[in-house]
Length: 72
Image 1: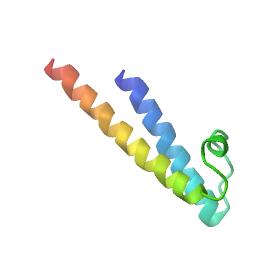
Image 2: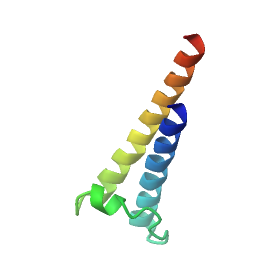
Image 3: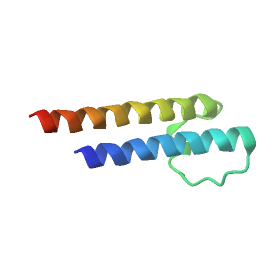
């Protein structure tokens, strides 16, 4: 479970940061094509910020799973 959450966290954070760099600097190629289906048109910056924050939250959940597996 912790490996899956870690992978999802990595994907969300990477997609969010890459999307932000692409919106602000327009030099990063679109590595994550699924982002254009998740984020509505006109709200790319907000959507990428949400993806980044969601990735951080999932990463925190992955750490919580690791700690609870060790304790339990």
